[in-house]
Amino acid sequence: MTEANCGTTSPHFTVRSPASERVLSRVDSSPYGWLAEPLHDISGLIVDIGCGTAPTREHLIGRRWVGVDLSSSELAVAVAAGRCPLVQARADALPVADNAADAVCAAMSLQVLTPLSAALAEIARILRPGGLLAALVPSRLGFAPRGWLGWASVLNALGVTSHPWLNPRVCDGVVKVLGRRSFEIVSSHRRTFLFPISTGEAAELLVDSLYLPGTSADRIAAAKHTLGAWARPGRTLPLPLRRVVARRQVLP
View 1: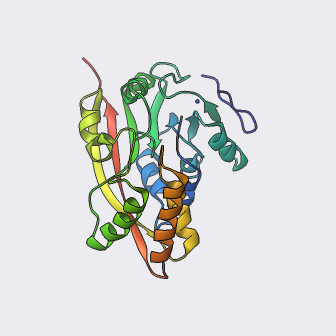
View 2: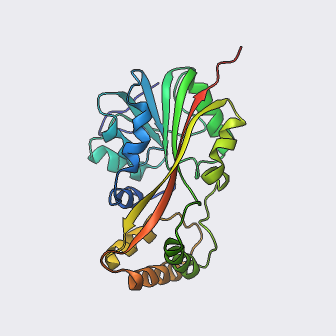
């Protein structure tokens, strides 16, 4: 595998914005730190798939880590933050040898990787037998009624009924998706983080962080206005996330 140092990235994958990291950095505790917890005892190589701006890097200092992403703009943000080494590559063509990784980290990327089946096959290929996959995905479960009201207003302004992820089945079905492949589920936990919507700026940031392919600028502006009008000190929106840890099965 060729690793890129800060200042050099080599070419393709995420469709997320750096605003996503900014949103998750404002919630009541770090989702990236939560995701990294099962990997703290890993001494071998950790490959961060769809790393984006590489926010998990700061929670895995001292580990042998490499971030992989397709987006040159997001990797540039990661380079500027000193989160290295980084490689620009596709999720379905990882520049990593067979069985070379002790762990794979996927922070908010499985729901947008395409084709998902090829990406999961690549993850299984690079993981050693018994190696771990730690993934963080959005969850649609667990909203309190007040949380539903805020999100319903935003989605209505956007003209959609649900978040249009490329792979919506992994949001609450990630355990089933991984279980059908070469993975044994170690744990699966859902946790709801709270994002403060105290100002119009926070409302705009949240909307900018959403994956909204094909949504018109007018719709996005309407959603920002709706959520901004709803914003006030002390108000929050719930962000339910699921962390799943799986082990690559050791075949007889």
